[in-house]
Structure formats: C-alpha cells, structure tokens
Amino acid sequence: MAVVLTPSPFPTDETVAEWFAHTINGWQLALGRGEDRLDAWCTKNLSALAELEAEAPLLVDGDSLLHCDVRADNLLIAQERVYVVDWPWARLGPSWVDWVGMAPSVAMQGGPQPKDFMGRFDLSLVSDRALDAVVCTISGYFVVRALEPPPPGIPTVRVFQAAQGRAAVAWLRERTGWD
Image 1: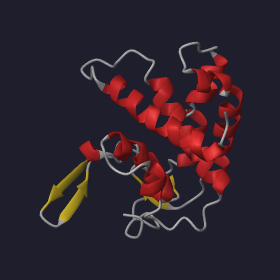
Image 2: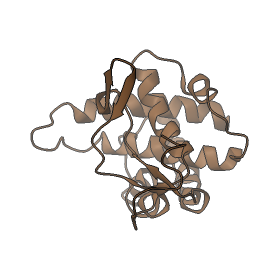
Image 3: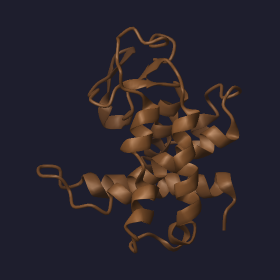
Image 4: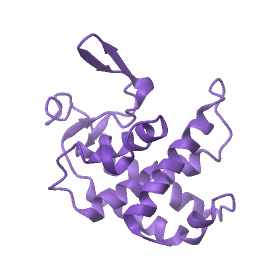
C-alpha cells in the first residue's frame, strides 16, 4: 500500500498529525482527568507518556494515504490478493504509521512481536524519537479507550482494545527502557 498510495491518489484534508493532536491522545486525556484505572507502570510514567505523545503530531508529516486501522478483521485475502477494507479513518501521513498501528494487533493475535514485525520494513529514515512518539500515541489510544463503556452494538471492542494496549505498552516499555 505504501508504494501505491504515496503520494495519495485521492485528495483529503485529514492528516495523521491533526488526528494525533486532537483525537488519538489518550495519555493526555488520562492525565487531564486524573485517571486512576491504569496499570502501575502507566500510572508511574503518565506525565512522561503524555509529553511523548504530544510530540507525535510534529513527527508524522507525510503524503501517503493511510488506513489508520489496519488489523486482521480489516483485511480480506482472496487467492493471491489482499484487500484492505473499512477506511473511515483514512488520512495523510508517513506510511510507517500504519505499520506501527498494526504491530500490536499482529502480536496479540499470535504473530511476531512488534519489534520483529517492524523489522520487516525499511525504517532507516524514521528517527527513534518519532517511532517512540507514535508507539506511545497508539498505546495511549488503546489503553485509555479500553476503559470506556463499549459503544452500542460492539460489546467486545473494549476487550480487543485492552489486548492491543497491553501489547503496545509492552513494546513501548522495551523501546523507552523506563522503569
């Protein structure tokens, strides 16, 4: 997708940077509301997590059309082809953001751990800080959203988000080395 969708063949005014700044900012939300339902590591590091998350919008400039929700149930495999479905969050950004977002889902469903999954891609032009900030943002989204009541008609979504959040936080802990 990164090759075919860079630059985006479709016009869109939505960007990953804006989405991260205004919507996918769970750690900042948790800090602001004094969230007390986080695990011990997240609680201890909440201020640092919110600070790192706040850097992400500044580090995700790009012109690729991103799906922003790539996971197993949004992929259809038909013979030799893979179709990516369900695009309500499509926006512009660097292609590697979709890979980061998919990595916790792959791990929680029995695939390679995020570090190994990401090793399949060329990230030589991505700074460690940018990668850390996006992993932080993704983990905050999953962890904090999992604390909310499920939306009508989707009773299992919060359990699914919590599992992705655990995988993302484990990856973030490994990347940051924070105790």
